[in-house]
Figure 1 (cartoon, rainbow, N blue to C red):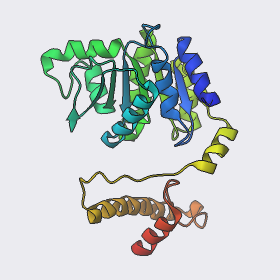
Figure 2 (cartoon, one colour):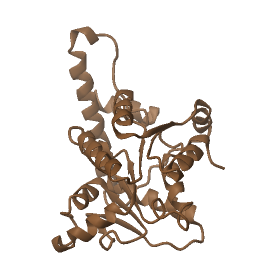
Figure 3 (cartoon, helix red, strand yellow):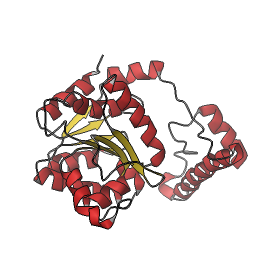
Figure 4 (cartoon, one colour):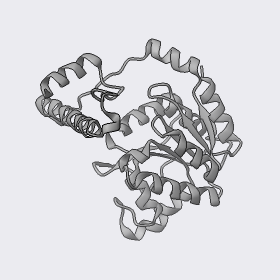
Length: 265
């Protein structure tokens, strides 16, 4: 059963309206932007010809592939994961390609990172014949991510190409700016959907074997220390003094967060 915002996303894209899906993590944003492609494979040359799904991090690609395969069911479709460590794609010629935003950006410019330079025109052509989905890609670079995403979406709008952006982190000011200047239709998850998600959602951390357990914990701890450092810097501002104690990411387990804090004191 589709949630209301997933159904709305499907309808908007089927009607040739690029969309911006705003919903918290774990509620089905990925599915919302994959469903229009899957449902259009046989009857829509603009939406169903090719999917290029872009992410900020390599580690997220496998989860999107699993979601797409689940939606396809018994339908056989060439799917490629393409990034620096797993360059499976052949010049983005597959019907579905899951990649990282750095690969997309360079391919878009005709100077692909992981393909021969003389294939640049073919890779750029694949981009121009694709339905492109962008999932939190601005997180790759706080300074450059948003301007680059805006530029890509502006060109795709000018050329009449369908795009979908999904986010749980963009502030409302940016969402309003994007919708005003890019013609994106904002689709938001309802309060009831969010409350329902909170009643059943479970978060699983999967260890892929590439790091020793100690190194993995050190990595998480290092990120937490960065958050603590920002917190300390903010507390030095006089007008913020006393308004908060420590910043913890909303996805961080409370007990684990307490352990990290005790370790950092």
